[in-house]
Length: 429
Image 1 (cartoon, rainbow, N blue to C red):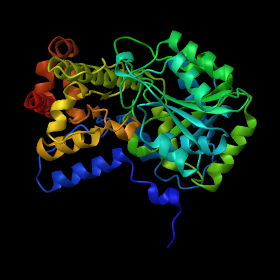
Image 2 (cartoon, one colour; image 1 turned 90 degrees about the horizontal axis):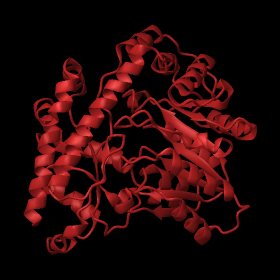
Image 3 (spheres, rainbow, N blue to C red; image 1 turned 45 degrees about the horizontal axis):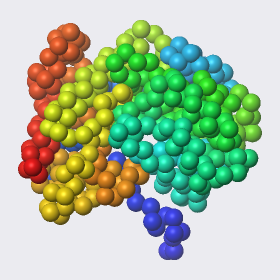
């Protein structure tokens, strides 16, 4: 059968591919330290489990936009956590935020601008629909954050006519870097976006996994008329396999709403009925759910900070984590020595680590970085989430006072992975 060029060129998602590879290697007895896949390891909250059991008999096709009681809960959730006002009528429920981003890119006209590094799927989704993609590469010295000047220069280079609609896909806290923006930075980015007729798709799936007492702010606060927020329950509630995401649209964009529902009706029809009813509980603003999110975020912070300290002490450059559960270290200072070892790209680096050091990571090139930029994404999730969460709750103060002992005792694969990364770096020296 003849395939489209776009389909033939498309490879499996790098994040899913590395996870399947690690599972196969572990199944045949190889002890792989898994820093390659960003799946929050914590258990499904018992109240959500109970709701799923209660609603397992729900089998009917539901409205493409999502059931109204769930959209009401999502509306209240965003008001409570982020002080954002979205009516249930402005909210779409889909089978994961990934497909909602895809449908938004399908519905909206204009070239796509993506700060690099960025999540692996954005560029491939756009290329499937032959939409022009322009990367705006950021640098480690600025914590891989997009600056207003970088954005302005990208528009001047690729799309000078202000009246032509553009799309900016912003993800923060960021996968793969773990970095985020403060309100003043978002306000400046919003000003540039508004001036250049730019629709911002703000992927805020890690919004509640923000560290060090900082509260997540949405760019929608400063550019409500031009921002679409996407998110879901995969990360902060550890429900990736539930496949439920949400999109929050500007109030006046009725044509976009209609188009999104129409696209959904012709593709995914509706999100799973039992999952939608269970998600009503997942979007509850009760103390049990909010405490669960808070505790899981605290563990993510503890482990990310521990990993950062270990690798930075080994003279590996890595911006300090601000949220999510990723770090983005690089070995560029060792490029000449690595080249003598046959390592000239981030792909070579990742391949060496999994083959010779039993550490699974992902190369920076998968996230839009240049091939010769020797950076990797590492995910801090290779531990027993139930055990770690329970131990953390038993004595939070002790866990934060002695994170090294806590991680070694209850997340030993994370500690072992740090040991291996350090040994690898010392072998270069």
